[in-house]
Every structure is written in structure tokens, then in C-alpha cells.
Image (cartoon, rainbow, N blue to C red; front, side, top):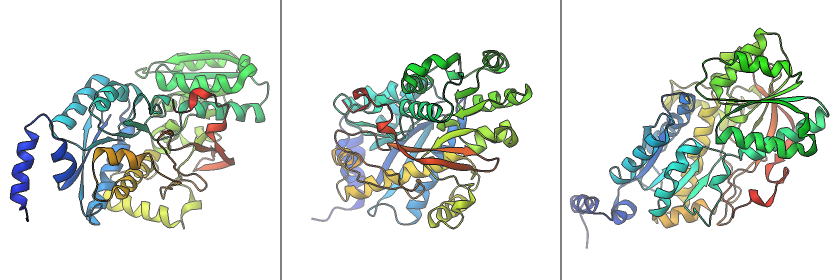
Amino acid sequence: MRISLKTIAAFLLLAASSKDVSVADEVLDLDIRIGNVMPYTGELAAFGTIGRAEAAYFDMINAEGGINGRKVKFISYDDGADPVATREQTAKLVEIDHVLLMFGSLGTPQNLAVRPYLNERKIPQLFIASGDEEWSHPKSFPWTLGFPPTYRSEGRIYANYIQASYPERRIAVLWQNDQFGRDLFRGLQEGLGDWARMIVSDVAVEGTEKSLDMQVDQLQSSGAEIVLLDVAPAMAAKALRRMNDIGWHPVLLLDNASASIAQALRPAGLENSIGVISTAFLKDASDPAWKDDPAMQAWSAFMDKYYPDGDKADSNAVFGYASAETLAQVLRQCGDDLSRENILRQATALKNFRPSVMLPSISISTSPTDYRPIKQMRLVQFDGYTWQPIGEVIESAFVGTTGQDRPN
């Protein structure tokens, strides 16, 4: 028997009015409805670029015919990085917009605030834009997966670099007083081991600080020769400007989340950022080494057509593209079975998948017991124009790893 679209629409309306909307959501909907929450305003608004790039990516996918014959409806709301607003917006997406899954929302406290809610309802919470280890607990929270390498493993990478290149040098850390800052700092301390005694100063800062002059001056007075900036992009720019103003030029390490030319280095002054060291797992769109790379040419054309207001020097735009490309792969693997169970099954069955904008030799693999999609990074150094690779790709899972890192 053939069912008309009008009949399907009527059934959807009836199902949506009931408590259990799973049939309407997962089987009969003509669109694939994806929910997302981002800080488009507030102290972390720089990361809103991720959500805008993801929205533009799905616009491109829809223009090309969708995924398995279905169009993607990407619904993204602003939470201002406030966990209370995150809960409100996520509930709206689930209970009013009836999204099939949540995808790519930013932040550790924000996603922790909605993780129980989503897991209780068996709604996939996929590829969170946060490197916290909390997203790797498949037994306790099977519906939640992260995306980038963990902050803790990134901290260990910096520790290994310091030990190899600057042994017995005094270290100072400016770290953000939240779970992001604490995790990366903890990884640094663990990676240094006995050499953690070389940390002569660490200063915690709130994300709302208007000036970092006093904090940077305090770090300088410690006599540190190496400084790790473990803060958000706007804070990193303030610290870099102050260091230049007082003529202090230690070896500078900058966390990956702030390694954006557009959001951190340019506001600080590109000339003030020469020599800064960070980590990367995605290609740098400003690097001429990729000018003939078909994938980056396609990304540049995508930006021109679907995100013309975006800044190609903003690494968050590359991140958003890569995460959306990964979700698109999961949905393609689902075929005609778009049940939430199958979406989770496919998200935890990625095998050496390489988003087109990912660095060579780095790939994504997951399994029912491995909820860490990206486990590799490489060190990079800013030359005043682009990020240049230094050293080889590092398997972050093997950098001072303890059993606590592995999925429970």
C-alpha cells in the first residue's frame, strides 16, 4: 500500500504530540534533524565559528542532494557558554524540534550539564567540541562521544617536548580556571614527572578577566624561561600582547584550542607571535604548502560559496568542517536505517576515516570500547605567517598514558 506525503505528515503531527516521538523522529521524517548548541555570544564567542562552518557544510551537502536521499536540517542555538542555557536549548531541540541527535556542541561544563538527560533518552551526543576525558566512558554514558584529542594528552605532548628540547629550564603556566585548563595542566605535570619541580609559577585566570597584565608580570618575576598559555583565544591574545609590551620573550607554548591565527595570533600581533609552539591535527588553511592540495582547494571553494563571511585564517572553520564531514560519514554508513541505535553503532565503527582537511598520517577510528576518535597530533611552530610542522606525528594515546585514559 502506498502512503501519501499528506498521510505521513499527519502521522508525524500525531506522533510529535505524544510523549514517545521516536517513530516519527527515526523513521518517517523526511529530513535528518541535527541539534547543536554553540556560544555565539559571550566570552567564548570565537568558537561560534565552528557552528557556522558546520551549518554551511550541511548547506553544501543539501545542495548536492543530501545524505542517502535525505536533506539535513541543522538546528543550532546560542547558549553563551552557560550550562543552564545549554540545558534549556538542548531540551528545546529534543522536545520541540525533535532532533534525531545532538552533534558538535562546544564545551565541557555545557555538555556535562546535558549528558545524563541525553543518555537517559538514548539520544546520540556525538563528536563534542571538547577534549575532556569525560566523553570516553562507553559503559556509563554509551550515547556520548568526543571528537578532538584529549587536553590531558596534549599537556603530555608539551611535557615531552620540553624534556627533549629544554631540559632543566624553569617553566611557568597561565591556565584557565575551569576543567579545560585543569586537564591540560594536569597532563603537563604528569608528563614532566619528577621534572614538574621545574614549574616555578602557575597562575589561574578566569575567562572573564579584562586584563592579564598583573598575571603575566607575576609569571615573568618567577624567572621562567618557558611559558605555557593554557587559556581561550581571547585570553591568549591578551597575554601575548602583554609579554611583548614588557619585552619578555620566553619559549612560548600555546594550547591547540587557541592556535587560531584569526582569533588569537592576529589580535595579539602576528609579529608578537613568531616562534609560538602549539599542536595540530588539521591542515592550516593559511599554509602555502596546501595551495595545490585538492582537499584544501575544495575547502577554500566551500568557504567562498557557503561561508563567505568566514575567515579562512580561523582554524575553527576547519575544525567545524572536519567534524561535520565525520558526522556525514556516519550518516552515510547508516544507509536507510536512521534509528538512533544504528547511528550510535556507526559512530563507534569508524575505521581509519580521514576527513579531507586532516593532516596526513592522522585518521579517526572508534569502536564500542574506544570513544576517542582522534588520538594523534603533531607539534607546530608559527613563523609569522603560518604554522610549520616540527617533528613527527605523535600518538597521543602513548604519551605518558595510564589506564585512566582508556575507555572504562
